[in-house]
Length: 185
Image 1 (cartoon, rainbow, N blue to C red):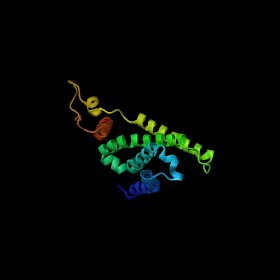
Image 2 (cartoon, one colour):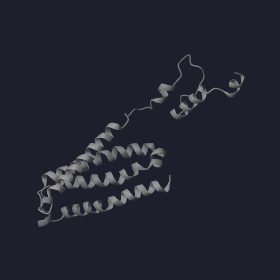
Image 3 (cartoon, helix red, strand yellow):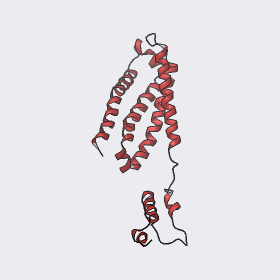
Image 4 (tube, one colour):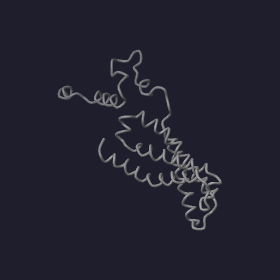
């Protein structure tokens, strides 16, 4: 895996650090007594907890989903992490929308700030639902051994245990004319 790929994950984790620290601080504040400036959060702490925990899981594990080398070498990790990252991201996005709607409007915050929160929360949720729709169906066995297995009268050929890329390459090589047969023509 190249060093530039690890910089991607490190950059995404660095972008996650400040909001994660803010979420941890807010959760710690919610564990204590209510203060006048935090009273609106004490009335309904559940969306904050869901948003903070979901966001930390989503950003922490999600940063590694972009590493192609890790994805290619460890596809099982990628699938398992994706099954954790996707619900965590949806929880983060939907709880963010929930917080935008239920908490009292602070005078320092303008309507454009609220609109941006609604836009980004909705876009995140829609993007994650589209990612879920793009996932290949979960099967117990890969589809290629069934489709590449030779029938009862098939000539001897590549073993069905080979990967699809290898099978395509072998078929392409078999279609190409041999040099000795072309010389005779």
